[in-house]
Structures are given as C-alpha cells and as structure tokens.
Image 1 (cartoon, rainbow, N blue to C red):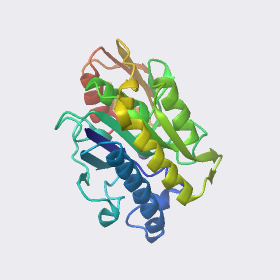
Image 2: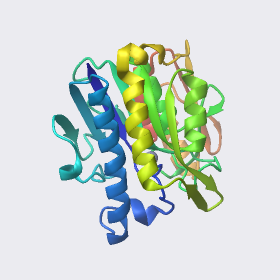
Image 3: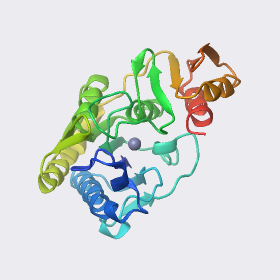
Image 4: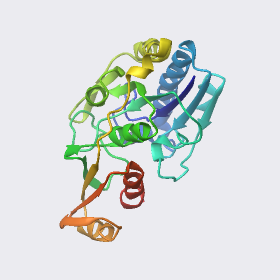
Length: 269
Ligand SMILES: [Zn+2]
C-alpha cells in the first residue's frame, strides 16, 4: 500500500508564532522537532497499518521544516519547493498512491481557529471555493480528489480537523491545538504523538481509507480577495479571470487542474 503524507508546520502541537516556523530562526528548532515527531508517528502508524511505500512532502513554506534523521527508515522525503502546480502535494502525480495523510495542518485565512491562519501565501485576504472560505487544506484535498485518492487522516488545529470532517466524513482526525485570538491551547506533545500513531494506523488498516473519498464539486468557482488593488488588476489578465471589484477576481472551471494552474500563477506566483 502506498501512502502520501503532506506535512505542514503551523498546526503542530504547541506552536503559536511565525518565528517558530522559520528554519533560519533558532527558536524554530523545538517546533521543527515536534513537527518531525508527529510526521514520524504518522509514518510508523501507516507502516503498522500495512503501508510499504511512503512518500513524505515537507510543506513548511521553505520545504525545510522536517529534521530528516529523526524520520523512520523506508520512506521517500521531498524537501524544498519543486514549484510545480501541485505545491504542498508535489509528488502526488509520480506514482499511484492508495491514501493521503496530512499532518500539522491549520485553519485558512480569515478564520479565528489558529493565530497563524493563512493560505499558501499571505498577501491575499480571502480565498473562496464555490462561496466557502478555503485554504491550503481544501486546495490540497481537491488535488487528492482529482487523482481519486482518499484522505484517511489529518492532524492539526481543531478548526481544520472540523473542516476536514465536513468534506470527508470518514476521515480520522487528531486535533492537537486550538486557536484563541493570538494564542493556542494544545494537548501535551507526547500525547499528540501517541494519538497520531494510533489514528494513522487505524486510518489505513483493513482498507479503512476506502471510506475517505473526497467529494469533488462538478465545477469550481474561485474567488480571491487581495490586499492590494494592483495585485487584483495584474491577475485579472490571467485567461478566464474576471475582476469583480477593485481588489477581487473570480475564476471558474470544471477542470481542477485549471484551478491549480490559476492558483499557481495568480496566488502562489
Ligand atoms: Zn500552511
């Protein structure tokens, strides 16, 4: 069984400030270790549940969050940013995976459930998919859905775990922290690790992951609200984009790969 793990950092147990996510800042070391312990638990759980081929994507914004020698053997680890349209799901297209897992995930921008709530980049105010506030989780979940790969497990802040359960009713979640304004309240780091280990195993064992398909909409209407009018104007020239207000653009497609291309050039680019 092949498992793909997308590991972010802002939803790591205990983390509450952007400096703690920056590999070039010494205060990030402890949180990068905790991020790695959580990923290692997901890997070991997946292996206990029957996975024999595991691909881990480090999706810290630099792609350099994980401490490689703390990870278990028999995995492939992608570090850095490939700069392809799959972004935080880079590598998902290289082989046929059976299940996706997500660790360290966090609530989207304009959500109070994590003081570090953001989307892929921070210069947009909101991203909506079919009228609903969306962020990295939704974008990446639809990428898995596009390839018809279920998402069996997610850990991160409580807000994103609730959102994940709405989109994928069978998904097994481990909320490790909850946001209150500029603060987070977390469970103990060692408990986070043991819950992730148990739950990731359960999520793939005996084919459980097959209950975790992503419901794909028939069409996608993407609304982006930028912080700057200039940014909105610039991106209004992307093929198919309509500028609906000085700081807002809209893009529609029935093909999710077109959505990923739009995001790549108009949000991540
Ligand atoms: Zn993130």
